[in-house]
Length: 152
Image (cartoon, rainbow, N blue to C red; front, side, top):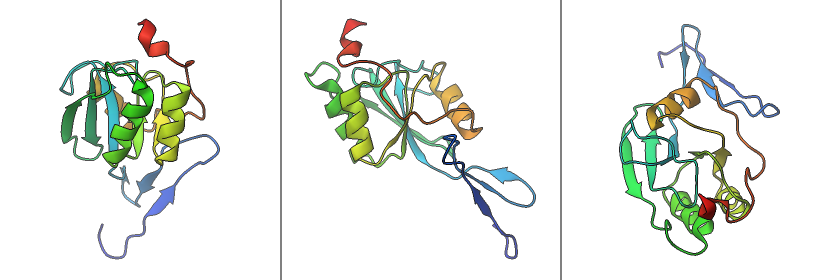
């Protein structure tokens, strides 16, 4: 940012809006490391609606779109939601974008300080773009009951 310009952090804690920076001349999203559940290992893959039993985790820098694809080590394990949440939390992400998250994974992500956005669909790239535009809202509770991912 140029000298003399002031940035204001805009955040609406009550509506769950995504924080962003606004300068005098243009709006710019702050860079965050986010995790998107994915059915494939690239940005054109579909968002996997299951958190604990997704095929891949896509770790994306929301500012540069650089990414790392990681197979879900908890995919076929018992307690997949908790194990997946621990894996994601250890990667230092700030936000998870997914279709659904159960109560155990939700609690484990919250304990790790990770914010959660559910109801996400489309491609991984589209999900990140919606996040960047502030079109997605944080969730305050699990979106499915325990073991819902096993039934799909």
